[in-house]
Length: 193
Image (cartoon, rainbow, N blue to C red):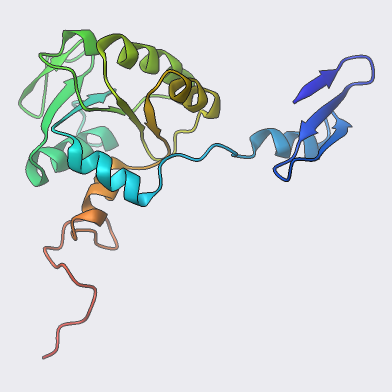
């Protein structure tokens, strides 16, 4: 998207390859700026990422049981074989495990860096992941930063964005219930009585 400051218009590249000029402050220009064009790995690739991984670092992990990172950490500890590391510079322990101040302090390079940080923090987390040699950055459900995703991919990272690692793991392993809890039931069929 380029901006013509004299006439206050933007040239917008549409998904069909065409481009057009629209007034910078128009509702259409604002809508087009919010459109998502980046696509991350498909379901089969995400399953492969989860199957190959042995360790996960949760960046932005919280010791507060009301936070989603706490719930995801609990799930990963109890329902998977991953080595789970918690990264939070303000916490000493989370879920009974040592909390690390940053990715560089971990005892190993995590296979997946799972991010619970605001969208504007994602580029710095990607830089940290690159610095330690991590290969995958998984950005949690509800967090989107397309520029960061494109940047990470340009540096050789696999980026998963706006997806919950707990939901994806449970979905692929037969434990996803309507409410997101592990039901222990592998089929969606009703039990015949």
